[in-house]
Image 1 (cartoon, helix red, strand yellow):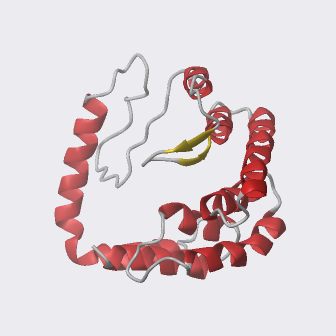
Image 2 (cartoon, rainbow, N blue to C red):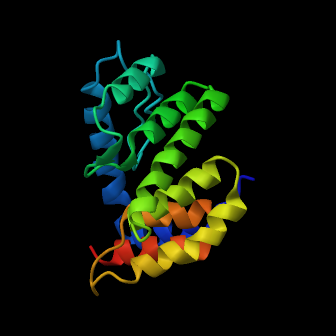
Length: 193
């Protein structure tokens, strides 16, 4: 399916007025990003002609190195600005990037156990609930992810007014098949800036 999604439409519509200026900035940022990477460690030889990426592609030449880096983290649960969740989930992501889906699924199953242990201690942990939705969907249990999503949504509605939902919530909505809610979350975030 190569049709544009509703999510793409919401994002595009919000940016049309700034399209030309954003494209210049994106191209400049992409070039600065790729030129600053070590080409021995990362792929940098992308075709940049006419490119105006809004996201930076960071692909290791050796995904196994990413796996070793993730495995070296001393904690099972990361609570950082860039990721909140089980460390082993990132190992699964590195394995998926390396083209090893069976190994990735094994790591995601282990990550799901870490999430479940955390939920046994605190059943209302919204981050753990959200990670559970995402992991279930990655493991092919979209029905289970969809079933859990209302609980996650209820936890998100408990936040004070004016608090932006975390980006993982839009991802959880999307992987659970609730595109309308994912688009609503992204629209809220776009209009709050």
